[in-house]
Every structure is written in structure tokens, then in C-alpha cells.
Image 1 (tube, rainbow, N blue to C red):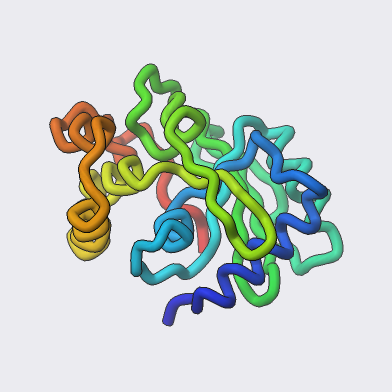
Image 2 (cartoon, one colour):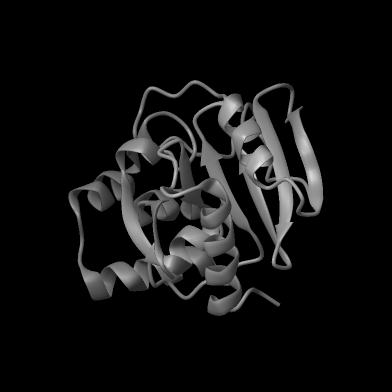
Length: 187
């Protein structure tokens, strides 16, 4: 069973409160939680935050101090992902880097994409950056998750096409699941 909207909002508000007065620019909400806060009806199991650096993961972990630590900051996946996870109001909140070089801007977690193509989303009393839905769709298509891709496609049918969506659908995207990509976060 996935998280309710209230579970998601309360966990994100708690994270935001612990991070300080402004959400750090070095953290971007990715994964299904990013889709959900933008209005796409997808099941969410956890909250994934992409960071620009290992130091940002460490700062996140320091801010979560006192909460149950599910996974301390550590290098994973052959040293291409620096990862940590904490339980926040019963929700696993994970922060990580993805340290695989990428020149393009159409990957949800690599290259300039998550930092160039993001939207500011109001979550409770906070505004946080979330990766653009077009990049979420690219991820789900590349991973063959048709149920999730269909939900995102339905959202675009209702809200309209963008140039970024056309680029993603044209196949310019580099799939996030390749031999050199890290697997999904450990559970």
C-alpha cells in the first residue's frame, strides 16, 4: 500500500522544517513522490531526494539527526551513488547523489536535467523543487513501467504537451537503467 497524500505532505513538511527556512537548491524531489505532488495519481512508497554532492547528503543527514536512521550515508553501487535514508513520520526519506557523467538534460537523475527542468511545488506550507514530469516520464518509459508511464501520459493529455515532452518522446533521452547505472535505492 502506498502513502496517502497526507503522509507525503507531513513527511515533506517535517523534512523542510528540519532543513531550515528555505529548501536547499542542492536538493530536488525525484521519483514517484515528485509526480504525486504535481498531481499525477501514482502510488508512492518513499520519498527520493537527489542531491548535487556528497556534502549535500551529509548535510541532509545532519538535519535529520535524532530521527530513525534507516541507512547512514555511504557509497553504494561501485562508488557511483552516495546514499542515506531516514524514517520521517513513518516514511522512508532517501537522499542520494548519482555520480554517473551525463552531458544531456533529459535524465531524471543525471546530468543537468534535474537541475534545469524542475518546477517549484507548494507542499503544505513549503515550496520545494521537484523534477519536471517530462523527465519522470522518460524514466518510467526507459524502465518499462507502463502503468506509471500511462498515468503520466494521461496527465500530459489533460495538461498539454511541451517542447521538453516532445524531446523526451523523440527518444533523445538516455535510459537511467543501463549497465553503468545504479540500481534502485536499497530497501
